[in-house]
Image 1 (tube, rainbow, N blue to C red):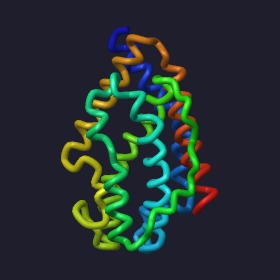
Image 2: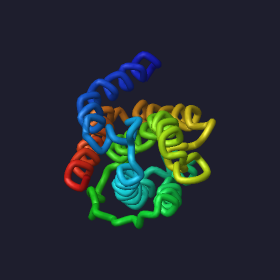
Image 3: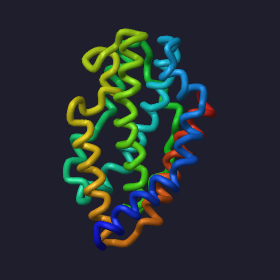
Image 4: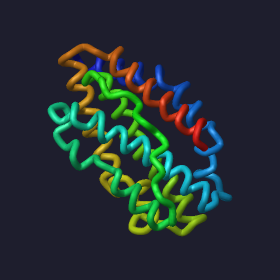
Amino acid sequence: MNDHNTVSFLEDLRAETADAHKKLESLPVSMAITSPTVTKSEYGLYLNLMHDIIRDTESNVFELLGDVIPDIGSRRKLQWLENDLSVVGISAENKLTSLQNNFTIPFALGIMYVVEGSSLGGRFILKNINAVLDYDEKTGAQYFSGYGNTTGSHWKNFINFMTQYEEKNQNADEIIEGAIFAFNAIYNHFSQNA
């Protein structure tokens, strides 16, 4: 596959997931964390819901991707969420049983695309949480600080790993299906539990 096809795959992935992404961002719980009036309890609820998603992803997706994403171990975020919940004074509730656990590698890559992509948005959310609630990357907003100053390079590395895998295996459709599944699963979890 040449660079044109890689660009086409990434454009298709963004286009095919755009509606599901917008739908998730339009939920009240999603909108609350970017609001200038966000409360500590709204923030805690969002962290708790993401804790479920990240716990499930790290349990069911990470092990499949070790050969595809060499730095997968450095992408674990569950501890960050647990630290943040502790600072906010909320216990993780684990409202999610399991999304699924019989993923194929390309489907799992699609899920990982959504989870890793949220690190980019997290940097924007961090600014709001810091301004309104005074939490920062060291205390209370570690999850949203992502990989700090290396968040952009972590994202680019992930995209490179994913596109190399897709070039070799020609499974764009399955990666896209996994990403849509992830957006919809997060949407359903948020809308049922917020």
